[in-house]
Length: 369
Image (cartoon, rainbow, N blue to C red):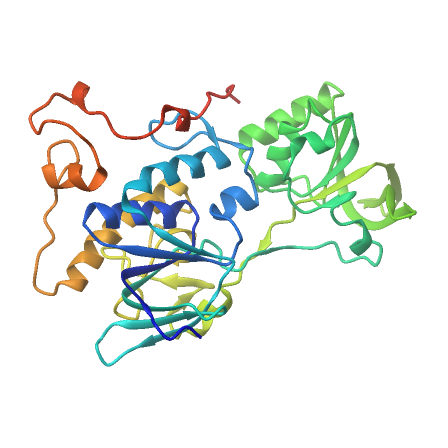
């Protein structure tokens, strides 16, 4: 373990959208942050699960992919020079006699931090797997639990298993790439956006894809290559679907991993927080994004951004007891502008504001749904 602990105002656990925007909000208040993530790259679920899928509900960004959103957030936080500790997991969180926290990772990195902010999404999430003996040898070749490169499925016959947003979204996204798509779900009821279900049904009516209600009960392989999928339909008959690729999107096992052992109050495997401050049951430990729970919680990226803003002010007041953190605006505050590295006259019109960010960071517009 490292002898010297890194001193910082905040340690953020999780480098997804909420964690990255938390860096920004803290930076505006002059607070430093180090970010820890168990993944080897920044981006959380946006990069791990849907890097190339379009996102349409980010304010003022009509459309961007998960990857583009993460790239933009990294550009936005650049003025605050956050330090990332990737491919590391938190192994210790302990309050010290000073009232600050000692945080350590599995690689021996140590921190002396004022607060801990958990932005871990679903935590150490893992996909629900196909429990069949033939499955293990096919993973990454003809059996997949996520899409990392849509081009991989170009011209292929494929079966997509699932009834949630991911299954429906990828069925629609791959319809013009794959040679054929059969969507398999155990029920005719879906846990997906009604508009996407309607579009899927229209594509079935047009003969461009098929939907089969049933359960996958077997795989047929030859030389570690998938040849067909066996599906038991409602009548009990087992149908054989010839296919080259199988994409199983049955959702994730939400698991907090080591976070669950920190003694924080949980609600249905999520961290209970005060939605005025986003502090957990332990003073000095906060939680933003999908990992937290409070009345009215909505698991949306934009909700995580809102939570990060309020959390930053709460952190500022926690670190300076009895001192109110003033609300300042980036449009008018010279201090905010200096922190952002923006060179403008204080009284300049908005048109004169020229943030020091490269134009190449702007996302390319995508076609609408």
